[in-house]
Image (cartoon, rainbow, N blue to C red; front, top):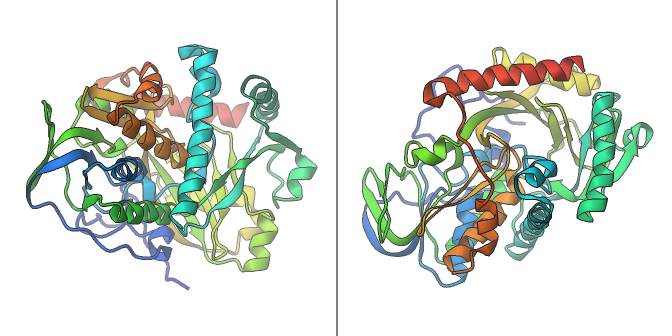
Length: 444
């Protein structure tokens, strides 16, 4: 059994994280099969067709698509492959986007929203296909449930099932409280919307699998090579402290970690801290008693809880998002209380791992994908729904570079405003807004 591990990210730790460390401690990092470290960039490369910032799901997916089409691709990663949200997220792969379909209808109309939803289904199919084709051992499991805590949430979810069937030809199942209890050993929820097409996986092992496939296809990946400047022009250049890459096309896939490279993109997303606890192993029988069908579960509060089982029979429980740059006080105690609210029968079970990371949210929670220039592409704003949609983003950017941009152009039509308040005030304003939504969750 692994020893209890300190959390080190976004201020969660008792000590500052060393930027030269390999991966922040987590159950994911301890349980993933190691991936050979790639070299740092030294000197200049000028024979690349495409240079990609970021070795997370988006960047690796785009790199893989392009390399398989014969492009010479270089990927620059500031830390390690999958070091950011791709290696630390909740592992839940869900059809759809971070916003409701009604938001996309309001922004673009029903026909475009329907096309976008169809693309999200393609993203889920692509995720499954890549896992199978490249034999990625990432603990894929079928099934996801959204669960209501309040009657108003139940009404909204049940109405949503009808709407998704009528408008989008997407079948979802309603489970009443008794049916849910057949699968989930908790009295907290009023029912569930069950989606057999969604599911969950081991996030870091999936990132490693994409990287192995990309390397096998000829992609050059450089780790510990932070991009410090994007030089735009006929052949954009991405500069690092010890080198640079000139290419015909550049792709920015840094999400919450662009670090000043493209201020016009950073103003339209906000880094949000999210946290995950892993209990000690429960044992096969006790774990299966909690979630009998091994699905992933998420409630629909604004400050949501989400949870699933690991392959070694732990409960992986996430939530308690932080909209400031500081982690919540007494995070371990907070996570224990949240677990107790769902599974009071686990009061005797210690938390062995606790870690955090940033996801990027857009103001309207819709995906923000497109181009900054004819030869500079980007994708960001996954808003907590990136496990499947990042792969789609990578494919659509690769299509656009190859001359077929219609599908990416549809995403580029989604309007995105910067967060209000500028760099100085946008975080305090968001914290105040989130406090209101949390109060609404508690009172209504």
